[in-house]
Length: 243
Image (cartoon, rainbow, N blue to C red; front, side, top):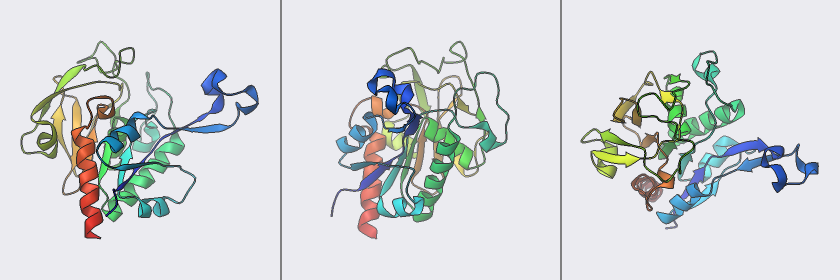
């Protein structure tokens, strides 16, 4: 049996944002951007990473992969969860929101294991009818938006509910990085918060009865192989063996 194919979502940006990396003649082109740490984390656990494009049929893509990672990135458009923009909201990517929500729906219908990271965890919550707090400052709570720090440095602890999937992976306490300025607010239907930072911010959500895990931090930047990526690859392998 071959190693499972793990699909990875990514960003899309105008080439001009890359500055001198591309010539001016290409500035109006669009580039798909995939941070290399995600596929490296998948490969470190024995999976075959596949960087996905939004230019193909979602159902067709999901039919060919064995697991899915929703990666970090821009803020979720508050219109998706019925809110108006508030002060502190950063750049949004509505087309990415729609694409990833479709990926998530298709993956759940097929029973694929899904790992949702940072923005991905927030989008999972929104997909289930939850809401987000659009901005927290560095001086609030545990100071979540550590955008000026090295992303491989830990920022605060997370206490994990004993008996949860997250506890099976990480134990009941771990130290994590923190690269987000939005946080989960109202919890979506079917989701259970199984990990919180000391200030009470949800850091882990799990979908009841499904292989779907959301982490607010960026495990791809920490130790490898990471337990969540190992879980994803193992769950995808088990599913692959059963079909």
